[in-house]
Structures are given as structure tokens and as C-alpha cells.
Image (cartoon, rainbow, N blue to C red; front, side, top):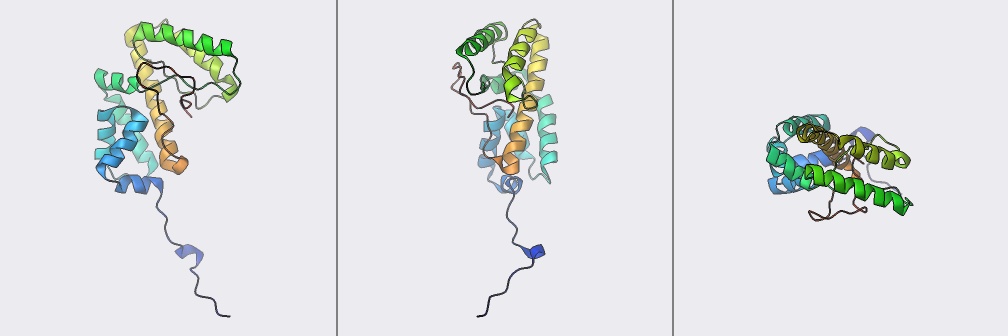
Length: 190
């Protein structure tokens, strides 16, 4: 029995990486993916318009740079797409109520959803970190809080883009409709 030729390991066919697909995607598709991760049209446009990116770090650096240039309106648009982070499975209802109350107080004071990057926190500690963050940031003046929220949003966006463009699936950032609060939204910062 004769077997057909096989390719040596160094000549295996190249499968496109998610970043390659992003770089080659039509502009509308690239913008849609970015908008899902970033929630800001201008931020998404700036990243899409500078394609192709040679590597993921270049894209993340461009996203960081563009984040620092967001206008107050762009920042408001991005914050409007955010929602409460998920709580770990099995969290007591009292914890849900505490988070809802703290988040309501935060939204009433600052006019937007509370955002915090929790990607470096063990899931069992996430609730404490979120509640501590809301409570401590409630004492900020609005301009100081806007700067902190923008930095947390930048960190969240960086994490979402990295996960998506490393092939981990779509941006884990879908938010409920504006004004809705859900404890079942995808985990922020994951």
C-alpha cells in the first residue's frame, strides 16, 4: 500500500490567527467587533482605521493610546455600554442586594455604570473588591471619578480585546440595554 506525500512539520499549512482575520476583515466587520468590545464608535473607528497591526501588542498599544484621547462624549458612550459585573455562582441574595444598592448610589452620583477591572482578582474575592471599589469611589468628586472610570474602562477594553484576538471567542462584554442592570451580564474584566 502506498501512502501519499506528507508535509514536513515546518511546512504545515498556515491557519489564520484571529488577529490576521481581524486585519483582513472588511472595515464594517472590524468596527463591529471593536464596538462590541469598546462601546465607543470613535474609539472603535480609530483602531479599525489603523489596521493592519503586526501583532496583538501593537493593537493593544493603539487601543490604549486612543483611550487617552476619548472626549467626554466618547467616554460617556463607552460607559453607557457597561453593566454590573457578574457575581460568582452561588452568591447569596444579600450580596446581590448590597451590590445593587451600592451600584444605584454610584449611578445616582456619577450618572454612569460603575466599572472596575477585576481580571487580576480571584472570583471568590470579586464581590468584596467590587463593593470596596464602589464604596471608596463614591467619595470622589465627579472629575476625579471620571478619570478613574476612564482608566478602568481602558483596562477592561484591553482585556476584552486581548481575549478576543487571542482566539478566546467574542468580546465578553455584552451589556443589557441602557438603563438595565443585570447580575447575569458577562463578567467584567474577564
